[in-house]
Length: 506
Image 1 (tube, rainbow, N blue to C red):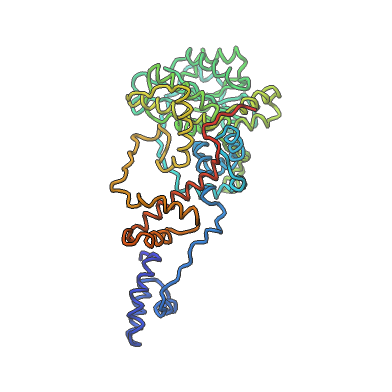
Image 2: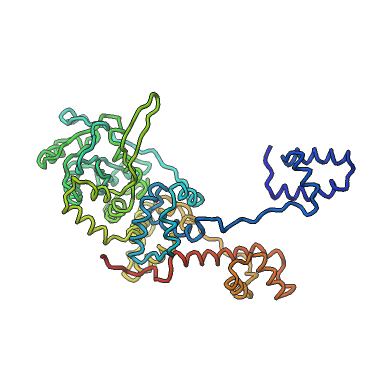
């Protein structure tokens, strides 16, 4: 049987109680049995409720006991959106660094109490607070190219368990096809390189599958990495299993290995980045042509900094089998930048260069550039007019509007342009505002007494302006009061400094 809500039970007590109190003993027994069966109360508690003259008493919510109020929630939403909606455990590790970076660039001005609560909030509480804002997204199965029969026998096999603890520079490589639902014709592919030790990820677009072009792209990407390339592990695709790539690896002194055919778990590190980075940033639409490749390259320039410096990830520490159970233990979430700077095998020169670069990065600005490139990329994929490049002034205004929208972006579903098909148009107001003439009065009363409820404000309004505002306006007043309280909470988070203020690097 479906459980009745508390409001329905209260109405039932009020309706049945009057008849119960004036009934005879035999009638009271029948009424009590019927009421207990419908409401789910035991007979003793049901008889107490029905005998009560003043009806049930409900205690008001004790807001003073809330540890994380609206201001903390508003700040957490902004941090979650800035981190590109990562999980609570990863966001917990990122919050101290993200707050420091956003405050330095003028995007946050947190109240001291709000900052202290954000720094001590747990990962479970983060997931619980953000649960209403999370939007579920469905993925599509990725296709795999047929393995090559060229020179596989000359390339040694490396499995997932053979890695151990390599030094930074040993990477896994894979190609992600942006073919959409049709694999015919020419389409763009993305080369993904993932470092085993740190998780550092590099992506580069390729106009077509060709071994000479792959060699040139590998050369350019290896130069952009903060450490020298020491090992290259690929799958059995023919674009990798050829003399051109093998000779390039031999000439550069790079250890060239491959995975077992049809064993994707042998390349678990790069396969995870294919979904968590490339598909999340680019989506599953078909991309072809030089213009799309140029925009994709610009997207990856911002994405590599955002992912490697502001996206913590888990790293497997230990796998232990206990009978039929396999137990895995992970290190605390860290960014690729943090793992490199904390690795004693990385030179001091590389660490200093990474720290200097990290000090100049603005996570909000990087995410804004990513969203802009995604909009242009999806416009090309959907054959719509692509948005024009913005000027410096327009870019600053766009960044300010982007930051202001982070706190309520969850209301619009998945904010990534690659994940939405058509923007939802706002419905707008359908009738005149009944509180238009008295809004200032209500706002001044609220500012004078912030603890006043919507019912109290409406009663004061009815006393001030008799016969003009019926009881049916209670919900409208409560909505208006909610907006004002949310504005006060945002003021505690963002403070007085301008959102688009530019900051110089330390």
